[in-house]
Structure formats: structure tokens, C-alpha cells
Amino acid sequence: MFESNIGFTDDFDCMVSVFSKKGTLVGEGKLVLSPKRIPKVEFDYHVNISQFRKNTFFKCTSQEGNFTLLSCEVMNNCIFPKVVVKGEKKSCKFKKVSVLLQGISEWMDSTGQFSITDNEISRTREKKTFKSNIVVNGKRITISNEHWCQTKHHKENEYLIINHTLISFECKSSSLLLPEVINLIQGIRTIFTLLLGFNLGVLYVLDRTDKSRNLSLYYANNTPEESNVKRKIDCFVSSSYLFENGKWDRLFKEYFGQKSQTHEDIWARVAGMFAFEGYWEYQLLAYVSLLDRYVSLFAREYDNKLSNSQFRKVCREIKSYIKEKSETEVVESVNVKVYDSIALQLQSIENSSFSSFGEKFEFKCSKTDKQILSIINLTTNDFGHLKKIRNSIAHGDSPKLKDNGDITYEVMLSKKVDLLLRYWTFCDLGFNKLDYVRFLNNWMYPITREARLNQCELDIATGNYVYLNTNKTNYNLAKKQSVGQLVMQYDESDDIFRFNKMASSALASWYKASEYNSVEAKLMSVVDTRVIKSITYLNNGYVTCNNDSFKVEGGMCVLNAPDYFWQFESINDRRCLFNDESNSWV
Image 1: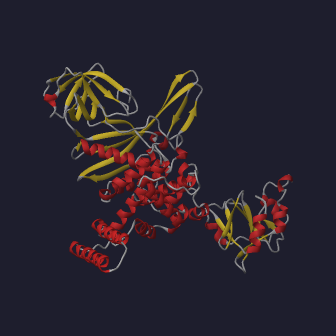
Image 2: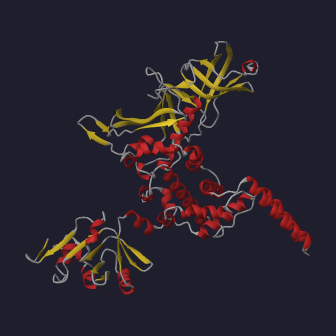
Image 3: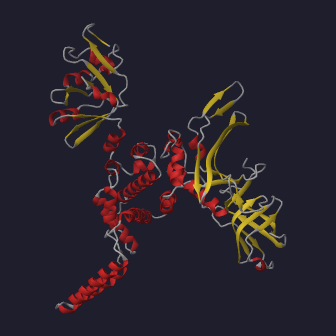
């Protein structure tokens, strides 16, 4: 399907004959397309194209086929088109456009399966599709996906898997203009960049307005040559999760909805940070600047400003007070300069009830879920350090690192800011806290590892971990116990869990006895059934005491576990109950 079209990651050039829209020959030139350059047609200097400088539409013919140049600018003996169409395009209006993004096909392939016969290997995938109806500039647009998977016999014992997912948008009632098409493509790219958590480029854009043929579109796009998406498991969000409960439809409606008028630019910039390549301090500067911009945007909605006349009056009164002080008090000349400096700064003071970036940040955090803040764990000291680095870099000074010469701490902070910005962005796009907790819980995604999240708080938020509260004595005993041998017993009268030394010791070498196939089987043979009526095995758990806690690695057993344990999904069916009537475990 794409062999006859132009790829955004390939260099392409050919000699073309260029004609104006009316059919007048402009001259012979060279069409040059490259991922790193603006598309252009360049002419030799003996060709005079100045007479066509007001033209914005050109047609080209060549041995490679026909091309159409749209939204052109003529300068320096070159034609610079905003968009190149491979094929004959008679107008700048579009009905249906499809986009192939880097990495999307592999990410969407969450249910692919191989089947083997005597002669062939084939791969199939479940056809999960979405469709969302949105309104942009008063035009009703449908966004949908289509995908296919094909297996070709490439060489002996070698097979080629062709796996593609196209994202399409279609406007049936009217036509889309070129700027609207570009904006929709960029919006779709931003959405999927945020979802996958990697820098995504555009591989192909197809104009499918004419159902009988596809026309390839090419424009300056800054697409990376290779996709950073290696495995779908490494991505921030699972594609299968988005097919649950109409999440796709809500996502597109929110992104292209009313809030996009004020937030679309910052959403795109948050996604654009994945493409950053440069010194770490400038990345940190960009992140903190985005943080400042986002909290300022948020604070603006709650700001109580003075009227213009009131604000001017307050400024005059403050200036008058400063002038009076500087003239009447006996002060040193250096202090007079300070007074003058303060008065001068009043000219640029902002009419706002928020006095600083820090105050706006605190206000935004006060409206942010406390559990998310605890998981990301960006402390007040961290924020103060970020501001100092931001100010140093912005004023051309060398930033002062926490650990001389070691940037580990600062890089970690940039990842925390990234995840906090992304949380606010995902909330804007219709996701909730539980959605985001699930995304953060994917430890295959590199940024969540690098941000050093508060794992205990994240485990609490997931609801997959059981917390056993005890006193200091039992806490210390349990913490000393080796991995995989811990047994705790619930004391209902005191509502705490106590360390069971006898049962824990009995498990020290349970696997050496062939008659026991599990820790529960071993415990059944040693516990006092007059007291112990249930044995529950936990895959995941914490032992806590006051503000201290430790995670039990490798599982543990709980004797006489309370009934509320069954609300946790992590507890499987490995629960044994003692039946007094039959005097046996069931």
C-alpha cells in the first residue's frame, strides 16, 4: 500500500517540470524531500521564477509521477511548498485523511497470534477498532482506526510480517482545509505520543478523499528516522486498556473539545519533551518552564484580579510611598538605589492575587490528588532546588548541583516533573486517578523507573497489596525473618498482626520434604487447629508499624486472616479453612 507513496523518514529527490496552476511552464527543477529539511523545488539561476512569486499552487511532472505543491512560497530561486502531494491534487480541500505513525502498529497489536500449518506460518490479530465523532471549527469529523496483519513467505524458512494501523479522520458534511488537516494530524500525533510515552514520528499521510486512489502527502515534520518503541510492554499506556468502556471516544472528545483552545499548546509541548536532545540542564529548564506555564494557566482560572483602574491606583500609591521614604528618611545612597529599583520593577508587576511561581505551584498542588503527589514524591526542597537551577540557567550561570559533578538527582527530578505534568494533562483528557496509577505501575516503562517513585504509596494506590499493621516488637521480629518464610497471625482482640515464630521456623526448609507441595500444606501439619482456623497465602504484602513499613518479597502466610482480605484482587484462591466437624482442612 505504501510502496508508491512518500515516506517521511526517507530522502527523496527527482527532476521535475514545474507548471503554474494555469498550466504555464515555470521551468525544470529538482524536487528535494528530506526528514531534516523543508521540502523545496530548486532551480538553476538561469531560470527566472520571480514572475511566479505570488503563486501558491504548482503542478509538477516527472518520471517518478506527478506532484502537486500546496501553500507555496517563492524565494531565492526556489519554491518552498508547505505540503507536497504525490499525485494530481486539484484543490486544497480534503474529505478523508489517514496517518501511519511510528510504533503504533506494534503497540496496537496486543492480541496477535501465530498459527502453524505443514507449509506456512501465519499471524492473525483481533480487529479492535474505535470510532469517535468530534466537532472542530464547527465541522463534524469522525476519527477511527483500521488495521491489518499479513504474513508473507519471504525466503526459505523466513517470513515477513506486515502489520499496520492507520488512524483516519473524515469530514463528510463539508471539506477540510489544509491548515485544519495539519492541525488534526499534529493533534493525533500528540495524543499517541502521550499514550505511548515515546517520541513518535509520522511515517505516511494519505489523502483518501477520492475513493478510487490514495494520494501521498508530505510536509516538514521533524520525524525521527527510527521509532523508539521497541516493545509494546515498555509503553506508558496499554492499548487494550483504552478499548474498555469507551475510553477512546472520551479521549478524542476531550482533546479536541472546548479546553483545547487554552491547553492544546501545552499538551503538545509536554508530549514534545520526549523528542528533546541536548544538555540535561536545558531539558530541566524546559520542564520547569512548562511547569510554570501550566500552573500559571491553572491559577488564571481562579485569579482575583483588580480592575485596571484599581490596579493603576495601587501602583501609584506604592510608588508614592517609596518615593516619600527615599526622600525623607536619612539613608545611605546605596539604599536610595534599592528604592529606585523597587519602584522601577512596579512597571512590570503582574495584576494577580498570586505573587509567585511557587505560590501558583502550591495552589495547583492543593487541587491535585494527594495520593498522586505522594507517589511522585516531588518535595518542597526538590521544588526549591529546581527553581534555583532554573534561575541559574536562565541568567547564564552554572547551576549548583546537589552532589558536585553528579547529575543523578537533578535528572531524577526532571522525570518527576514529567510525570506530574503528564498527570495533569491526562486528567484534562478525561482520565482519572485510578487510570494514572495503573499507568505508573508499569515498571517496564523507563521514565517511571528513573523517577524513583514512592513504591509503597504506589502499591497502596493500586489496591493490590495487603497491609499488616503490628506493634514495634513484632515489626522488628518480622523484618528480621528471611524472605519466603514469614508467617503472621491476626489477633482480633487487639486488631493487629503478630509474628508467629514457630510457624515461620517450620517453613525454613519445607521444600525439602517431598510430601509437602506448598507452604500451606506444611503449615497444616504444624499449627494448633484448636486456635488456627484458616491459612491464607499472600503474593503481595507490607508489614507496617506507625510510619515504618517494609515490603515482603516472595510472599507470606497469614493465620486467621480477617474477612476483609478478600476485597484484594491479589489474594488468590490459596486459602485453607479448618472444618471442626470433619476435623480436616478444606
